[in-house]
Length: 506
Image (tube, rainbow, N blue to C red; front, top):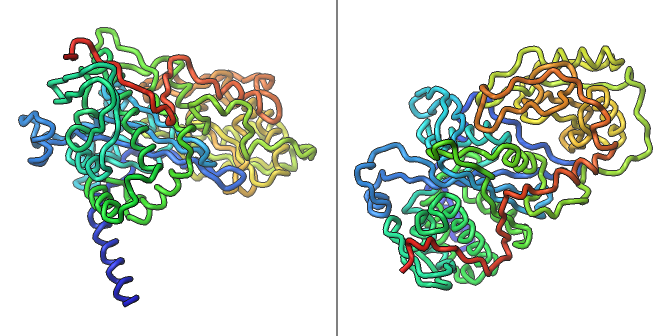
């Protein structure tokens, strides 16, 4: 009986595994390196959530309309990055409007080897260049954030999963009827399920000013409510309902090969459950309309600020100010060794999905260090891809040495990190430092969306006084301030209600 039950369970798990559709994670030329684990061995996780407008089935045509679009390569009209902090204390979800103008890097379809040339277009069109792996490459080029996994769902998948969950409570501040999505709700709270849930998630004209900003807020409100429902456990106490959810979810999802099993999805779910709802923040990238309003652009300064916060594992709820991270331990009192006794490995990480690496960067920077007395600095020819320059070190007694390397090149102390994956000291020259022997005074990361057409790297020498002290605390205090243009929705906010566009009220 025991062997039979175990065999039956294994067969069912295999059945669920076979339900999952799997695709390659990244279709560009240069995949950004994963975020390094901190001193405690903890690493943040970045998952791209995609909603496809595919009409490639009878059910999707029925739900989405636009029969003329049947057979058209789908667009990724919903795009959200789910960032889970290294210590699992908080989670930030960042949406990007579908009409954002970006650089879509060159992508190669692994199924038929079709090569799609790099171009400037709206971000939702990236899905048409070989699949979700090209959208991942586009996100990495836009934000500099390394993507670990993706999950994609279509219209029919949303409906089946909404039914399996058992409904999600949502709220509108007045009666709403949007004939374009089919949504019709009366003022107040309503539990939406099935097609009504899809209508809620697709509605744009009926909310706020009719733009993607309102639609993204509605999606955030829905997701927050669903998370609260699932964490409360009221929906999943029945084994039959739980099995139905597993069945529907695995049929609905397309995932990267790294998430391509029920076991991995289950482990991910257990990881996410550790995050308290009060530390979940959902927001939309700060953006502005282009001249003429045909597309939107990342808001200069604010968008990159938000991207940088996520890259450096800083929560978007503004509560990380003054919090000392595991790799920011106070000085041990051990002074730096003489420069000639410090071993430094230098890597060239200047390549990105849309930019070829700059040849010779590791050798140039290693030579600069040697000229400054770090005679044991050496260039490793291994090529990696990293957006921000970083100095990583293994044991705590190497921190003083690593900071001495940073000071010699004008690298801010906040870019010096202890990592359990490191043994010595490694300097990775990132895409923010594509020219010059000294770290640039002003970051030269490409303008969001500009790709290789962005400003070239400056050849300025940074003033070491600009780095904020040896423990980097001041850097993080400044970095934790959320831009005023970022409107976040807290996971514990059960009073949030969508503002209805008066033109679509009844």
